[in-house]
Length: 216
Image (cartoon, rainbow, N blue to C red; front, side, top):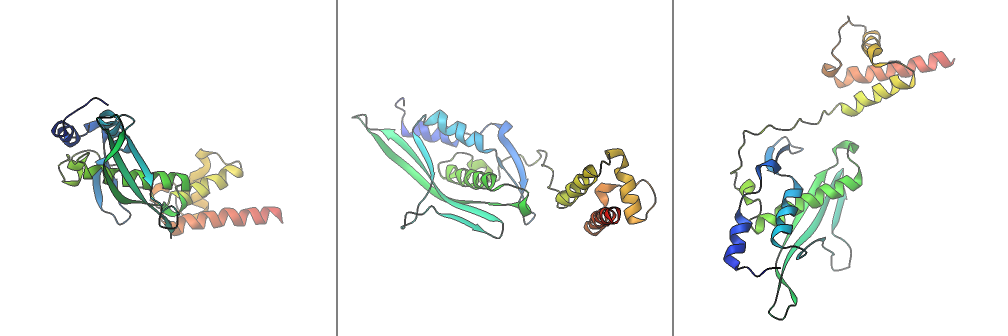
């Protein structure tokens, strides 16, 4: 790594990340936050410390990785370490930061590998903020006028189950509204996206009952 003064490194660490990396997200409890995509943290680290940084899940005193899994939540305790080269050329630890990161698995709508990845990405952003990388997000200095992402549809799994059940019976998309009409005993032009959870469950039950009747 090219020799650079500490003040120069600090100045570069504190520079805002590219606006292209800004993303909005909503926490499981409904709080809207603004931050950066994980890759932008990695790009800044690679730019300032090429091959001179490590990021790992920490092990406890028993040598076991500090990973927490409970009630659909995945968390991990991670450490980001930055290095420098001494006058003799030896690679030496310069600074490190430790933080927990976590992800809610969204009722099974996210795979465990992706959950681990998300938890580590969350921890990485927190650790980077200790060195100034992306710290503007934690200071609330990012433009809040960016377009927020769509909130995950809590009924998405049920809707997908219905579409899958319809597909198994050979029912095409154009006939899907007719299934809803028959199952719910309503007039035509039903907006499936506005159906309640109970209504969607009734559709599934009706499809299931029809399967039993046809098999008898």
